[in-house]
Amino acid sequence: MDILKNLIKGRRSCRDFSDETISGERVESLINDAVWVPSGSNNQPWRFAVVTDKSMMKRYSDAAKEHWLRNLDKNPHMRQYVEYMKDPTYNIFYNAPVLIIIYGNRESYWHVYDCSMVAYNLHLLAEESGLGCCWIGFAHNIFGEPETMKELGIPKNYELVAPVILGFPAGPRTSAENPNKRKPFEVSYF
Image 1 (cartoon, rainbow, N blue to C red):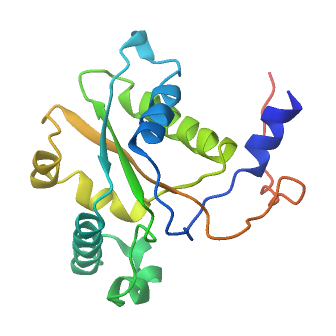
Image 2: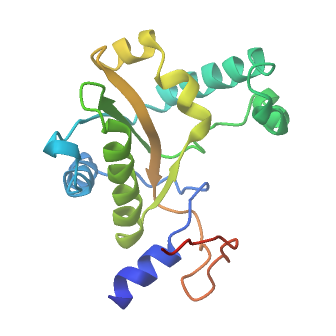
């Protein structure tokens, strides 16, 4: 159990990737392992789009940044990132070699929870295998758009849950021996 506990506590989001590519077989293996989570009524409501084309990721990054800038009044929480969004060199996917977009079937009531567990499993499996991973919240505005979903072959009854980047870290990250502290939280017992 210490191995799992150390993996959970040592996992860090990666935003700096090497140029090394990841084979399609390895990506598929990670996805096949990540889906071993419980799901409501065993619906297994997930569907994936995998993007490795750098020009496609750049186009999506630019579109997401433009969308955030146009809609700052509706999304005041994004104001803190304005300088990033205005920077033409900033890529919201941090030049990662792989983007895995997890969609959930709306026909399954618990699809967001189920697919979120798959996303977290993907993070843990990436960490375990020496890869870096990060959930890209900046991309939530673009991958839920009907035209983007159509381009990615995602049926209309699916909803975006998690855009996740994957790759080999460019350098060392904080280790499990020196974890970030957690904020205090409350637990109620009855």
